[in-house]
Amino acid sequence: KSPSGYSQSKWAAETLVANTGAWGLPFAIYRPATILGHSRTGITTHVGCMLLRAWLAVGAVPRELRDRKRSPVDDGSKAIVHLAKQPESIGNAFHLVNPVKTPFRDIFEMLRSHGHMLEEVSNDELRQRLNARVSVTRDPDLLALLLTATELEKQLRPRPARIRFRDDEAARALAGTS
Image (cartoon, rainbow, N blue to C red; front, side):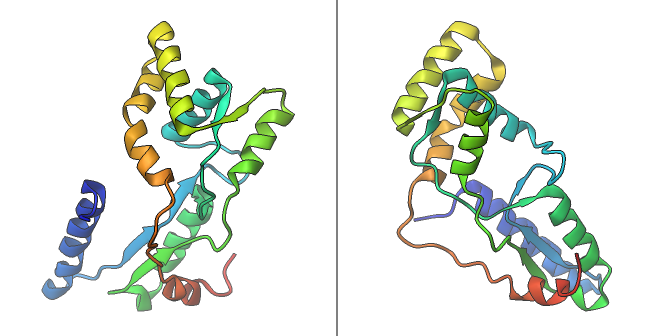
């Protein structure tokens, strides 16, 4: 199966960056895992907000959502800045992966603890509810999320073979930092 356009564009960009080394330009490649909001404030990306708004708008969360290794934006940016300051980082690629999975169940329970009634439903049911909500409200954020739902569902499905990102270079280079 061929990689997604997103994966192909990342590969092309990294190839171009790595080729600058042949011209004597210093480079390093940083591959952060999925990035979440700030660890203290919770401020997140627009897509993160859209996803939460969608769940709250339809009163449901996906039953099949997998836990993933996500990193708060402030942790990831601190790691990249630290690595970028190290001369030995030049010419290397770093997978910045949080060793701890973020359980979506915790996010669901936090929302429920604040009084939001959220039913766990299948992805198909969630899509139907979102479709119905968009047809009434014409909310552009919910519509954008609905239009990308097919791609999101592909990522939510269990995969038979997983790519293992080696984060040993990043872990070694970040040892002793906070």
